[in-house]
View 1 (tube, one colour):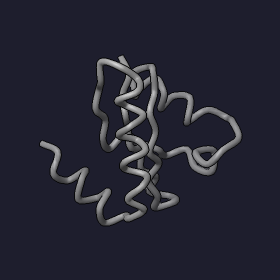
View 2 (spheres, one colour):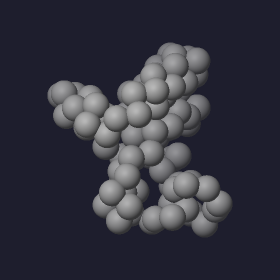
View 3 (cartoon, helix red, strand yellow):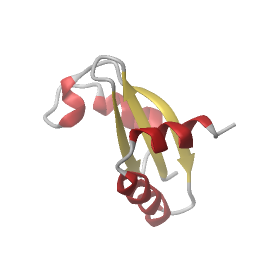
Length: 83
């Protein structure tokens, strides 16, 4: 099922926002493997937020919205208000 997810790395003290057609846990496994790209810089990524959608375009829209905030405090507030 499509989803938007946010990962966090303690080592980098950074968030990573993404959208996927797969389950976020499966996508996390790929982030933790050897590859090029931003998430290759650390191997301690963990899922701090995920939300499933019925279609990928909605998941992608939320990913773009979160990325547009360009504010760590706003992302943290968003994550913390989720029950």
